[in-house]
Image 1 (cartoon, helix red, strand yellow):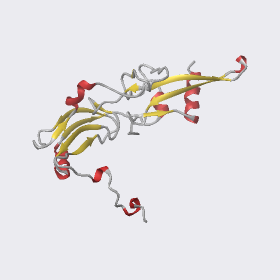
Image 2 (spheres, rainbow, N blue to C red):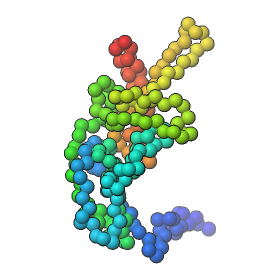
Image 3 (cartoon, rainbow, N blue to C red):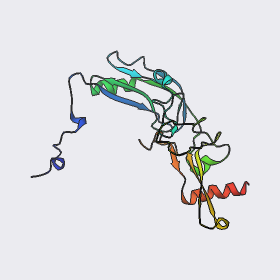
Image 4 (cartoon, rainbow, N blue to C red):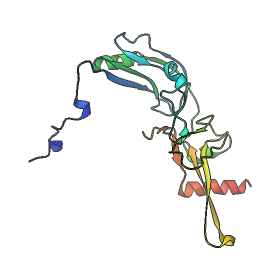
Length: 207
């Protein structure tokens, strides 16, 4: 017997349609970093349900370790693909047409794409503030570095002889403003290898 997954006859959740079911669409930012001046949904038909940044502003930020994500982009889009508005409509066609009726006024802003550049003093900040989450996922002492893109910094010490202990600094940096999920946040990358060494070398040179 041929596996139904091979023939494509298996029914998945996206294949199911129920009476009264709505079809959702999400409008996403085309820019890696942009200020959202306004979101207009006056052209969306009354048969659709729409969410804009103004509707979710009061929900604040969330995240498993660093609270750096919002339901929709509020004030600024932080990566290309950041959700700016969402809607639900009775049919797929209505949803697509309604999505095209949403008008967003963007102001494109400078962005960071390289983790080393993101760690430099004066780099464009992905997040102006970073709050540590209060849940079990933040199981170690997170140390966001205020005024920087470094969301966590810690030292690893290893070696049995205290006089020969080699120290290594590792940082997690907000950079490369692209969805990585989920990325909640989706704009956090971990610095490893040569990049980590370059950051550490610059820190040593700066004292």
